[in-house]
Every structure is written in structure tokens, then in C-alpha cells.
Image (cartoon, rainbow, N blue to C red; front, side, top):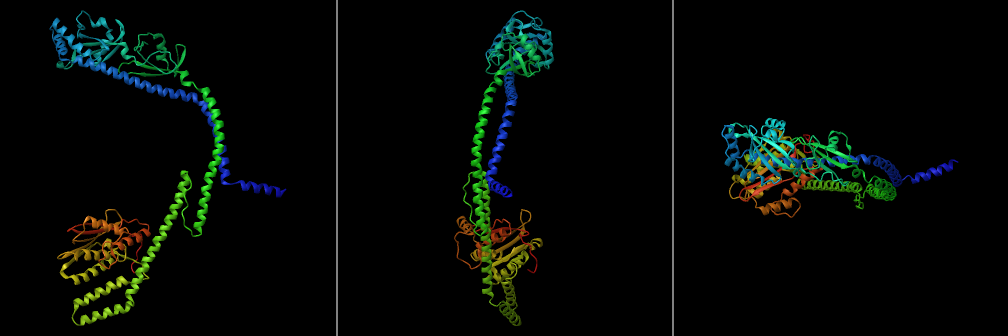
Amino acid sequence: MGKGVSEVYGKIKELNTLRNQIFIGFLLVMLIIIAVSGAFVYNRVSYLLKNNAERHIQQTAVQANGRLDALIGQIDSLMEQVANHPTIQQLLTEELDGKSVTFNQRQSLLQIISSYQAYMPSVGSLELYTADYRLLFPIKDGSLETRINNAYITAANTQKGRLVWIGVDPNDEESLLAIRQVSLMDRWFSRGGYLMARIQRSYFQLDDPLSGSDGGESVLLVNNEGELLGSSEEPQAELLPLLASKDQTVSFRGKEYVQVKLRSDKTNWTLLVLTPVSYVTKGLSVLRTVLLVSGGFGALLFLIMSFVLSTMITRPIIQLIRAMRKSRLGVLTPNPESVSTIELRELNNIYNGMIANMNDLIRVVYEKEVLQSRTELKALQAQINPHFLFNTLEAFNWSLEEKGEEELAGLVVVMSRLFRYIIGNPNKDEWVTLGEEMEQVQRYLKIMEMRMGDRLSWNIQLGPEEAAVPVPKLLIQPIVENAILHGVESRVGSGTVSVRVAPAKRKGWTQITVQDNGPGMDADTLQSLYSALEGGPSISAKGTGIGLVNVQRRLKLYYEAEGTDVEGLNIESKLSEGTVITFEIPDNGGHTYEPGQ
């Protein structure tokens, strides 16, 4: 019995692979999602459709309200121009002063008002009244009090020149009325009369109202009495309940509609946007069928895709595991990219990037070791027996001092210290402080000054804080040597070399600048020098020092090995203006220097 259970457990354990887990997990999750989402979508789709339709209708209402405001703005602008016309202002002022307006003056208004009406044919007529409500234009008898309700006259006086919308013209059901007070600009905008416009009703027909179509919404413009302002139809009895209703779904003319109401601030009229419910909710039965069919087809398709996807995921992972096993054995080779998914491609790229970084680190360490070995070999070749060399120089010094050759004796001492610094102890660290490096540069410049005499002058600027910054040994002297070799010696007459150490613009960094006033370089030579610094061919065979190329390489090797990204040498030079070489190093150098190393 126990043996049978063990065999079953062993077979189950063999099937417990990553691919099978992904396959079964994806399939179960998909079946649950299809069942839950299908039920949820079917139960909520009616509400969502109505809600989306309401937002769409609201946008339609906002657009219609914008069109209404534009139409009202045109009428308002027209009436304002007429009211402010100089002739009309003059006639109303004379009338207010008690002077009777003559027939010819009233007749002259016809040409003025007709010229404005020509720009807007929808304005049927314009009527001008005096401050005491007498009709001034058109030329006939009439009174404003008998033309409209006194409440609108009071509203026009309250608005003080702003447009007041009355509604349907009592004398013409095909027109709407609007009135405004005419303010006399020469009388401190006092009331001088009234200007009333009669606008065609079709001017405000924003949509084909009450079309009875189930294919979309209808936009209705209604006043507070339930009058349909954009059409001559009179469904007041049917529109009043819609104005009072606060429900989203209303019944209108035997059909169900989704309504949105928007009130115009300029006219106090209401925009009604009605959309048939049948249009909003149609397609639910089709949706039910689509959900069932798509759910079954999706389950089958997902079954196949889960199997394919699980295989696609596990296959490159297995390849990556094999590549990692090879790297563990010391074979650092990148894994070829054979995947199409973003995640697996990113994982493969990260592994390949790690391999590339490791190879780069191995190369940097190897080059640093080779460079250090060559330096030590040169030091060994140069010193042969450093104690013998130093003792010999000391003997020269004593001999010269005994003979009174103090200048030459001092030169021998400088040379002795220079050799001690260069040869040093190969077992000690390669790092020194900037103060020690500047002392070495100063000894070198003194020797060059002895050799060149008045042709060379130099100065060194170094602060106490910068003097403690660690730096690789013999990093600055080759640049100074280059400035003398290619700058001062190539110059006719005397030359100057300046070495300046100061804080850099970015915090925590120090800038070293070596400048000479030699002949300089043209743009092509400077570009060739930059190319040589990046590993290109050398532009000059003059000199036997370490050179700028080696300084550039040592900057990269030492500081990049410590995790610091340095920019390297920056060279500025122009013909007859000399050369300036600068570079920046971090204050800690990525290295903790202890005196006596």
C-alpha cells in the first residue's frame, strides 16, 4: 500500500513543473474571470449604456447651449450697435430735452436700421421707443405699454442696457421678442428709450424637434410656460411635466426618453435633450448571445494559448539556466537573444549586460595590473640598486658643497628627491596627496629652470584643503612636461607654465589646470589629439615621457576601477594663444589615503 502511494506521489512530483503550473493556473483563472465578468457585464450593461448616453446627451446639451449663446450674442451685438448709433442717440436726447422729432428725422431712421438688418435677415424688425414709451420707429402710432407686459419694461430698466428676452410675440406667433434699454452716452448713460427686436422663431431651432425618430436625441428650447421656442408647434401641456420632472427617464408622447436639462443664464430658457430609451438599450439580447459565444470561444482559445505561453516562458528560462551553468564553470559568454516577450527579453538583456560588465571589469583589472607591472619593471630597470644611486648622488652633493658649488649641490639634492619619488617603494600604494604631487612638480620645474634659464618661468597655486586630496602618483608631472616640451620650448623667447589646483564647480570635486603660453594648436591638430586620447594614432613622436595618452588611460583605470565616472582631460588651444589642459577628480578619489603609504 505504501509503495503504491509513493509511486503516485512520484508521478505527481514529476508533473509538478513550471510549465504545468502556469498552464493550469492560467486556465482556472481564465474560466473564473469569464464566468464572473460575463454575469457582471450582463447585469450592469443596461445601467452603463444609460449612463454613457446621459454623458453624451449632456455634451450635446452643452454644445447646443453654446450655439444658443452664440445666436443670442449676435442679436445682442446688433441691437447694441443700433442703440449706440449717433443719430439714434441724438434723436432720443432731443426727445428727452422736450424737442419733438420731425417726420424727416424719423424717416431717416429707416435707412440706418435697414442697413443693420441686412447683416442679419433673421431679425424681422427693430422698434424704437422713447423714454415715455412712445413708438418712434417704425413710423406709426403705438405705445410700448400696449405692445408688451410692463414686467418686461421694468426688467429692461433694471438690466440698464442688457438684453431682456420676452418670448413669443403676442402679435406674431412665428416671432420672438427681445428688448433693451437705450442708454444715452452724453447724459451719463441715463435712460433715453427702448429698442425692441422681433426675431424669426426658426432662428432658434437648434435641432429637428419632436421628429419621432428612435435613431437619436432631440434638442428642444422651451421657456418657463412650456412654449417650444424653436418651432411653431405648441406642446405646452406635454412639455411642462418634463420641466418639472427630476427623473432621468421620462415618458413623452407614449415613449420612454432619457432627458437632460440645461438652463440658459442669458435667457432663462431651458434646453431639453431627449434620447429614446429604446435607442440607448437596444442590443442587450445581441450582447447576451455575444457574451456566451465569446466566452466559450475565449475559453478554448485561452486553453491553447496557455499551453503555448507556458512553453514560451519556460524554454528561454531553461536556456538561461544552461548559460548560467557555463558561466559558473568560468565560461563568461552571453546568452543569444531568442525570445520575443518584453519581460524575458529584459531578463536576458540583464544577464548579458552582467556578463559584459564582468568582462569589462576583468579587462580593466587586467590592464591595470599590466600597467602597474610595466611601471614597476621600469622602476626596477631604472633603479638597479637604488641605494647605490642615492648614495652616489649624496656623495656628489657633499663633494660639490666642499668645492663651493652650492647651486649644483642644490640641483643634485632636487634630482635625488625626484628619483626617490619616481622610483619609490614598489610595495607601497600608488596613491599620494596633491601636496606631495605638487612638490614633485616643483622639483621637476626647478630642474627645467636650471636647464632653460630665463626662457622658463612658472608658478603653482595650491590651497591647504586641496593639498590633502588623494591622487595617483605621477599624474600631473607628465602634463607639465608636455607643456614645457610642446609649449615653452616651441616658443620664441621666454615662456610661462602655470599649475592651478582649485575647487571645481560641482561639490566634492577638485579641478587641476595646467596652462602654457606656447604656440598652441589649430582645430585639426586639437581634434587629432582628442582622437589619440580615445585610442587613435599618436600625432607626435617628440618626447619620451609618459604622455597625455597614458595620463588619460590612468585617469580612466584608477577612478573607474573605484566606481567613479571621470570625464578625463579637457584641452583648449588656439594658435598663438597657448594651451590649457584641465581635468577634475573627486575629493575622496574613491580611495582613502593614509600618510606614510
